[in-house]
Amino acid sequence: MPNSGLRVQLCGDAHLLNFGIFGTPERRLVFDINDFDETSPGPFEWDVMRLAASLVLAARERGDKQDFINKLVLSTVAAYRESMASFAKMSNLDVWYSLFDVDQLFSELGGASHAHAGTFDERSMRKVRRRDSVMAAERTTETVGGELRFVSNPPLQVPDSSIIDSLYSYSLGQVHTNAELYRRSLSPERRYLFDDYRMVDSARRVVGVGSVGTRCYIVLLLGRDSKDPLILQVKEAQASVLERFAGKGAFSNHGERVVVGQKLTQSASDLFLGWTTMMMPDAGHRYFYLRQFRDWKASIDYTQLNGEGFLYYSRLCAWALAKAHARSGDQIAISAYLGSGTSFDKAVLEFSLAYADQTLVDHQSLVDAIASGREGVTSVPEIV
Image 1 (tube, rainbow, N blue to C red):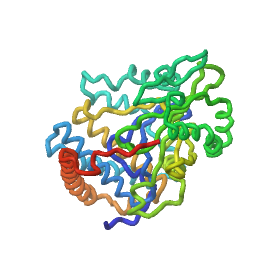
Image 2: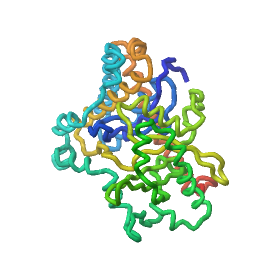
Image 3: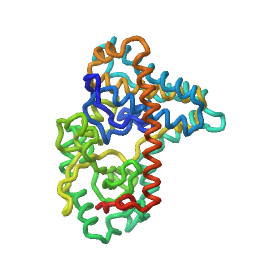
Image 4: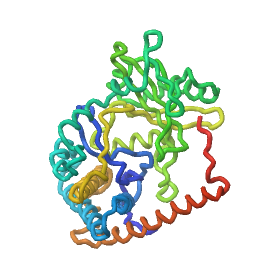
């Protein structure tokens, strides 16, 4: 596929739902890209086209008319182009200092939300700020023998003590023994903080639809006492789908690839973001990255936005994407390539409409294959 040749650190899966709200180590709520499982170097426009296609699909799901969908995509791509032009005029430091504070998001987007949604106000911000390890522990643990342990809630969550299968037990044992590998991936001052916690339990956790087929665990650590919990998510990182088309990156450890890509493109990253490796008896080396299970994380429900709000939100996603590309690529060259006209905007619109159509065709093919019982379609691999 022809491309610009202007490479950046791609998100790799920059669809609408991979942007969201989270807390920085400085305890600010920010809006940014929040998923990096597919991150890898590649042409900047691939992310832009992925975002645009997702907008078409989301708008169709909302029941928006075609004229609005065209406007939505053109406005979003224009926002990317204009944001990149702004970043091209900034110093390198100012680009790296750029972030979008959620206080601004709530004040500007609040007026565009449906009145009954109640999503963007001071009350909802307070609720987001309570989504931390303490709340996560309240919902996922119980007290056993005077100490916190993960509750058994199969199939969503299966604690170490509840896992009979030896392979699962082996996997969770690896979570504990590879803590030192993870520790070494942290910066020295964060290792000091990590050392103030002790690991007390672990559990296998079901992943979301987008990560089906990968291993995921959560680990419970305690600080001063049971009221000082820290829950880390241990998520498997596989090879990026982009490597087949854009070439392999610099990292053989895909956990490290995810972490470095995230730190390169996000304005601020999780305090405990790091990586490790585990040896599975029947699967060889597997790569993982770790982060806090919940830490002021939230997403914006685009279905609850009116047209004005959806336009604003999509343009904000475009800003975050341009910022990520400006941090990791040549913002001046990209801005010069895009120019000040709308040729790029229109080309992306044409692509996104065709891509969205193909997505519907592909999905129907999958549905038909499942209905017909075609071999290999309904089988799910065992993950340990």
